[in-house]
Amino acid sequence: MHDVRLLPTRTRNTFEVGQMTAEVKPAALRLTERQEARRRRILHASARLASRGGFDAVQMREVAENSGVALGTLYRYFPSKVHLLVATMQDQLQHMHETLRKRPPTEEEPAARVAQTLMRAFRALQREPHLADAMVRALTFADRSVSPEVDTVSRLTTAIILDAMGLDDSPTPEQLSAVRVIEHTWHSALITWLSGRASIAQVKIDIETVCRLIDLTAPAPAG
Image (tube, rainbow, N blue to C red; front, top):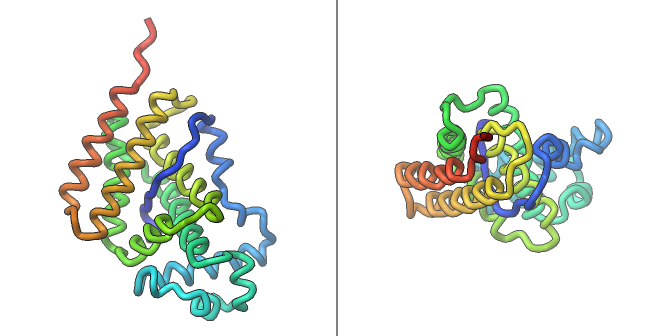
């Protein structure tokens, strides 16, 4: 699922677009090379197990065995399964961001580019629904102890949407508000789709509708 993955919920009110990319780099980048390699093995094992059987299939002992680390070591990296699956989502989002920068959306209008980006995510999620469900459930179960990781997921999602909008400068408060609403709609649409209560066609309509907020919040031309 290294194609496209998006999930939302919390966003800061203000930030610099250029600075945010640096802010959302995972803490793993500060690890030693050996520690980073171990962390990558853990995340890959988590994603593989979730892809096969969803949230319940991700058992910490099995993750440890599949990644070749001691169970105590695994818990030092990730205190719980929820921490692990939210970190797995961060990893998926990082891959998605890289993919989108290499192959950006092709639509001309910002709203259409964001809608295209989010629908690319849904098509990828269709291919691995168990993994998608596991990550969504982890976000739903996350408590205060997972807040930093959840905030990172949200900031990554915001960065992806702002990139799709093609913003070169800091977004206005109105644009950030629109992005938050788009994220909330994305989250709701993803949950209803995973639960079988919405079709991809309906999701597409909802996403395209909410993305029109982008046009309404665009700054007026000078002069």
